[in-house]
Length: 213
Image 1: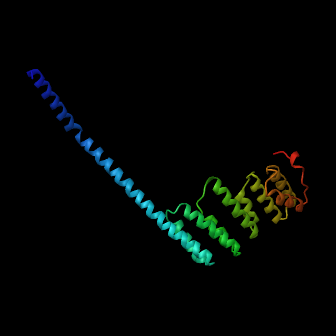
Image 2: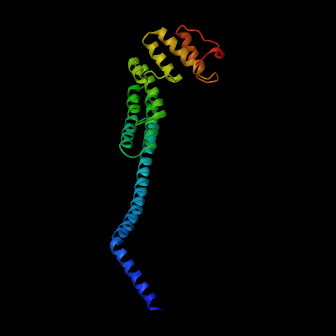
Image 3: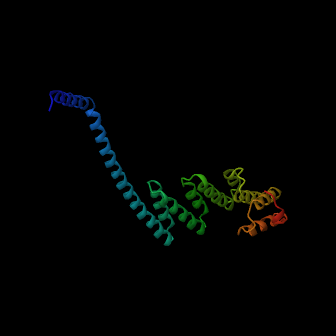
C-alpha cells in the first residue's frame, strides 16, 4: 500500500474520531430518547388497556345495578366512570342510567345525569335536546328555551314549540311547529306526531309538496 494511501486513511480516521467526539453525545442522546419513546409508548398502551379493563368492569356493574333497579348504586358507578378515563363506557353508562331514571319517573335525576356528560358537536346537540324535553316535562319550559336557544333544525324547532305550548303561547308554538314541519322529510316517522301537535295548537297542516324551507 502506498504511503500516501496510509496517510489518507489515517487522516480519514482522525476526522471520524474528531466528528464522534463532537457529535457522539448527541447521537447517544438521540438513541436514549428513541429507546425512551418506545418504552413510554409501551407503558402508555399497557396503562390504557388497564384503564379500559377497569372501565369495562365498572360498566358491567352499572348494567347489573340497572337490571336490579338499583338506580342509586348505578349512579355511583357512573360517577366513578366519569372521574376516570373510561371514554365511551362512561357515555353509554350515563345514557342507560338516564333512560332508567326517566322510566322510574325520576326526571330531575335524569337531567342531572345527562348534564354531567362531557359532550361536543352533534352529540352535545342531541343531549341538549333530550335535556330540554325533560325540562319541559318537569315544568321548566323557560330553561328549555334557554338551553335550545335559536336553533333552527327540525327537532329543536319542535322542542321550542313544545315549550311555548307549556307556557300557553299557542301562536308562537304554531309558527315553530310549521317551520319544523317544513324542514322535516315527508317520510320521516315523527312527522305524524308533529302534525298532531300543530293541529292541537290551532294550526293547519299544509300539503308537504307546498312547504318550503
